[in-house]
Length: 227
Image 1: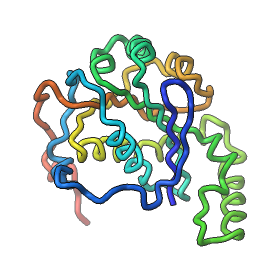
Image 2 (image 1 turned 90 degrees about the horizontal axis):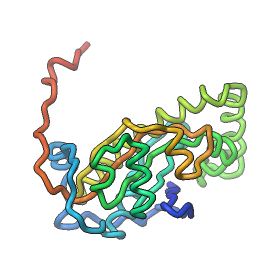
Image 3 (image 1 turned 180 degrees about the horizontal axis):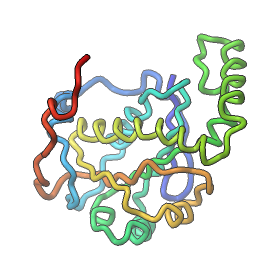
Image 4 (image 1 turned 180 degrees about the vertical axis):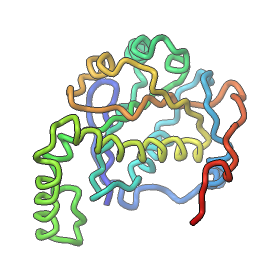
């Protein structure tokens, strides 16, 4: 069972089980390889709202990402309100893709929330003993660490969900622009997030209104060693 934690631009939070809630692939969905091979960064989007059912499914798919100890450190803040999006664009140094996209998903890690609710991440099949073990493990591994240090560990897990989010979006026919160019403190203040959260990035999402540059990547031989 995976729980998706999503904050809206108004500050409300929706948490729900995604167990058996993701629909079967439709005829218009892309395969995994198609999504990977056709994903490009888009900075100009069609000016129309994103389908809310599609948006929910994309978030549910992203929440299926794996994490060590099933910690699920990622959180999603979905910004669609035009006024909040304009202020988010200011926090992102005026980059136009934030204002152009019908929605911007702020992906962040909240390791302190994970520690406070560690038992929730234990698999139900493990029973009470599993819940107790999960609590003991998290307290033993992270309890003595500084907040910033364990926050970095949580961020590494959230980065996995960020990648899942981009591929889930492309699989449903949407385009994205992954961003790390923003002022983290301004984003925290704007969305009312705790000081300890760490950001995987901003992800403007919508339908492309430009072709974008084709992928330009190193050859596999440049990146891989076999032993």
